[in-house]
Length: 191
Image (cartoon, rainbow, N blue to C red):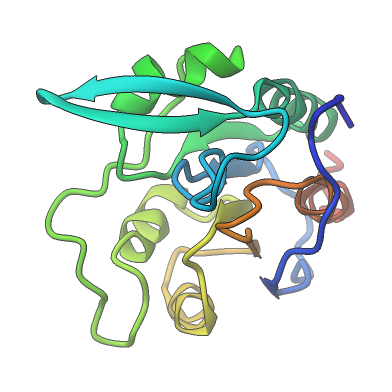
């Protein structure tokens, strides 16, 4: 792992890859910002503070420059496509990606109020379900729980997935990245 990305334990909700003959499209690696790339605890070693101005509001985020290299390496190693799955939406390409060395990424749009769904799932979960269109995916987020797993498992058009629950106090760790790598590498993507 790139220097500066800390090892640690992450709680996870996990489904093993289902038996599928072949994956014809690359898997997705969905990445949240707050609580994942921007830990919500106090100042952490290896992180740099950045000020972002969105719609006239100033936000202070702490970002670890090693996370960008780690995510790019994970995507390259597994053939996954990096995608923002964050309430920052397109603003992540302006304020979060550049300090991390990430290129412009596609975005899961999450319009509307941030209210939980009828089954207790997080407000982003239905938008993720609509976005993935059957492609296998790993979702790195600090707000995914059992209701999100159930929603995705029962939603038509959602295939194999792994939810990695990142500790919002620690942010993304080596253990989170390895968990994602192991699962993505286990997918059968032979022609």
